[in-house]
Length: 208
Image 1 (tube, rainbow, N blue to C red):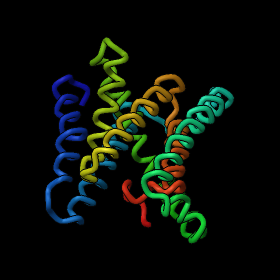
Image 2: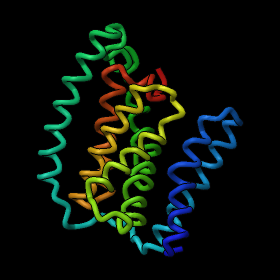
Image 3: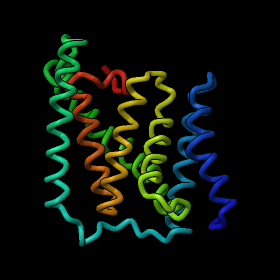
Image 4: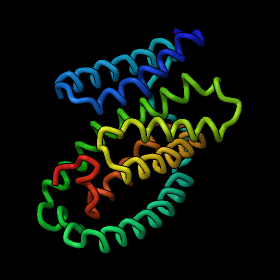
């Protein structure tokens, strides 16, 4: 499972074949089954092949993380608020104002059951399995952003692909610097929750 050939096949199946297949019209239950089995495979490889312990590291640089995340969130908040205001003003903060309990529940479910699995696959798994294939760090991060965006191809929305590509770059840079699935998951959750809060959640699959 550590040979170059095996990893290349693994990369193709996990990051290209499966995401593209989700754009095809077949049973949602089969798609969910593929997601579950794929995630189980990723966890198995991380535990048994890459020898991860899934423990919270003691060396985490929380100060640097929050400093950088708050700056990035401020920029994202300003840009997205203006975007929603000028393109769909009625959706601006609609859910949090009208359905606060539903808003809280969705934020929790999204952060735990969507964000963390995504980061295990697209950052932890990707970095640990394929980093040795790339001598150029920038290219490695660029490819990570591409496959992360590709995973959202089933939305059939150009803006979503652009946003997830940019998000992929941010998350890959964070993981590259801090080497922490926990921290990059928190960052991912913060930005995703903000997009839902500001009124852009529907295009990203959040319940309206």
